[in-house]
Length: 295
Image 1 (cartoon, rainbow, N blue to C red):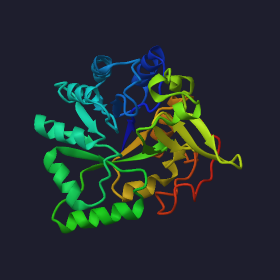
Image 2 (cartoon, helix red, strand yellow):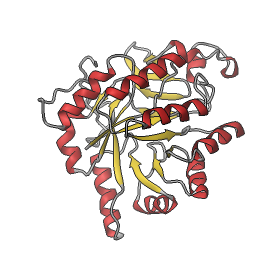
Image 3 (cartoon, helix red, strand yellow):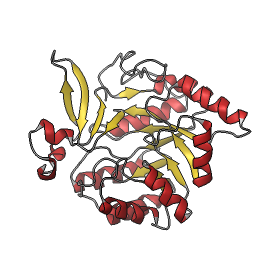
Image 4 (cartoon, rainbow, N blue to C red):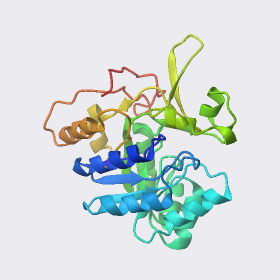
């Protein structure tokens, strides 16, 4: 079972981003995803910067994947996506059907990101014909949905591609053309002042009763809790999961990576460090939450 570092979901200063990824060179990771997936206005690093960073990290022998936006809203964003896909060296994570089309047209293999919403074998087959070689499951695709997809695929005489699941981090629940952070801070989206950079782990959102509920991250809404599937490793293996995706966050991320690495090797007793993910069990995402303090 491999470990991947998912794309950075938050807006951090340029030097913080570069320092973070250079630290990852000493971590036991197999795959690193790079790129902006949330908002094109986050320009501390541009497309050329992400590709240059990919070339630097690829020197360590890991698989490097360049990730595209989950929601494209402008012609300029499509142009940036084209440059990513035509980089000539690295594969791509397609998080939008525009990216799938461009990958197909350019003959580029791609990872089907968790926002593609692939729920049945026929859709999966079509995208594999377009170049999909790995599928990152959507946040709500749990054990039973995966079993059903496997059965449909086998009935069609095929096998599932390499499978990846979000095993650590706040779950990316939804995206919108509206910027929730700008709205929460009472500023216009086009004059947001890049206020996301003031919230390196997102902006907590509570209910009217002051109960923790969600996390606001620009145009993205995330879960409030940091979810942890490490204790479910035996089930994940049995279900055919090949890759555990860990999303970057503020804090000692190295400790999280090492925790998963030691656990996958069976070197330490598994101890849940985040919240239990109800989606994997086939219930509401929050239903089985039993959080401890995340590292």
